[in-house]
Length: 189
Image 1 (cartoon, rainbow, N blue to C red):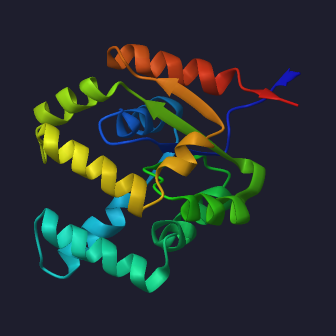
Image 2 (cartoon, helix red, strand yellow; image 1 turned 30 degrees about the vertical axis):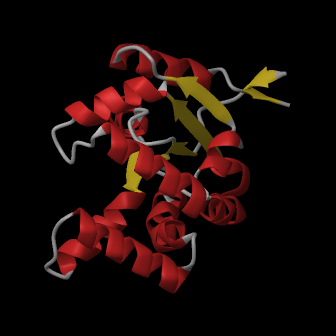
Image 3 (cartoon, helix red, strand yellow; image 1 turned 90 degrees about the horizontal axis):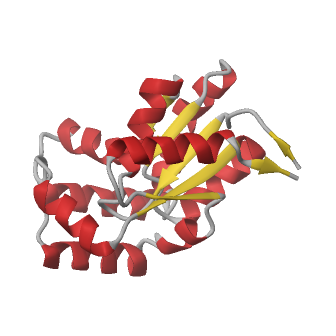
């Protein structure tokens, strides 16, 4: 078993409140990865249409998936990812959600892609989500969101099948250290 260089593409995934966006931000700021935010596609489309609010985001998200399939965010992000890859620039994908998105990325980028699942205890995720400044969630809203994402978006499959896993049950420094250790020491057969 030998060690390899850092991956060209890291897709960070996990349930809401695990710290996946913090891990993606850290990779961008400290390791020079270019961040591609899958959720940004929805936000941009909502703004383009002059809409606002979580309900409008949900409607646009569902419309995009209806039009492009469950892999919509990956399909709509391929050009941006490819642009960076073609310039030998590393990419971090913030928020891979479905098995279909993962399949599309694997089809297009193969072994250049590494998936990194971020986990946190449910009670801690609820605490974090209740305290966040933007779009805080109640405990019941977290439960409903988890249920919807696992059952309707197939979100659990890519989390379970992720190449690498880290647990974020402490502070951000511990999360960043875990991400660094995990990515820098990943074995290759």
